[in-house]
Image (spheres, one colour):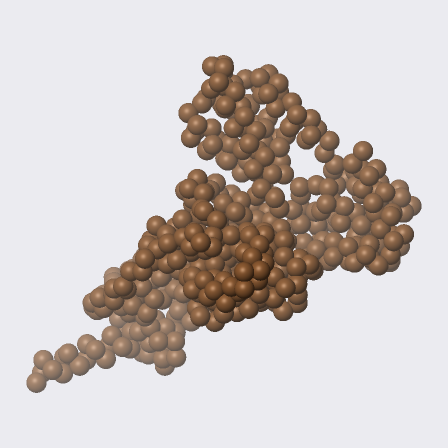
Length: 487
């Protein structure tokens, strides 16, 4: 009888400990939200569940290895500090992977405050309940729907994607979708950025990872191919078969969605396909050259649906990222490329990773064909056409000066706080031209205009575009400035 009472007391103390941990974790979560923001918290930290305390260490669980590694690298130290502030006896935080809902000691979030003499507050060891055995999922046959899709390029994997500050968020989102398709908040995944920055690479990498896991069927195609297949189905009176094929896949990836602008019937079909797949819990990944809100030629309802998931921007590359990409490419080729040549290319070719890699490929091919070492002189000779095209670079300062002269305002007005239309409109035009004629990111452009926010630059680009459509004289002024700057 006494043993029974002791067992009951142990269970009661363990439950009370969970309640205490839940209260502490709730406070820590509020601190984290205030520090990192709601979006970042929801993306990376919301899925953490709390495990047991053993001696001076608490275990936190995350659903995937990738998420575990990301949180450990970005927030590990901060989590340790916050837990130690809440419970001084806790000195370390251990991050582990556990299936969602299977973490062995996830505390309730609405438990009442328990006495401070409990094991968690004392820092005493608590018994670690055995984790329930994972339920094995019946494997599905992985396939690329070759009757619908374009083939995936085997070169484009996560391992060959060079990660840097401009693309790390898009990369992280792509990895998340590859590990857990149809995760809440990540369906659809919308990747956008300029030409040659890695959108297609990430889409192929997602497909390759999903197929390697062997769990799902994948269909990847360009928006152009989607349209052609739809038109062919109409002509052959097989639209129902086309719809059924598309809606039977687990993951649908559409590249270069901007191609559908102005194609109303194809947009209509894509909208219904989108809804059918999302409603069925299937994953959609889309890429475009602009964000959903900036794709003005798409129907409003489609833009709204595209923006309801995870939208990730791939910014223009930095010098450091371009160097990393070139080093990785050169290393894989087996040809020795001097550092000064890599630095020269990274300085000269700044806007397009695809063009940067193509230039290096030409150098490597030239070295292999003629058995000559890669030198700076040879680089300038072999790539003279590419380098000539990149010689003329417009700067933001030059744009500001030309626009100020054209509208007869002071150059300092470009970065001032004045909001009068006579100043604000030329400033917006300068921001618009900076976006069109330079490879600078929106935040970089904003900093050049008096440390303005990137949303201010986005608004300026949208507003100038609208005014050019409405006012031919204004459009002529802007085009004149563009020609002057490009000449």
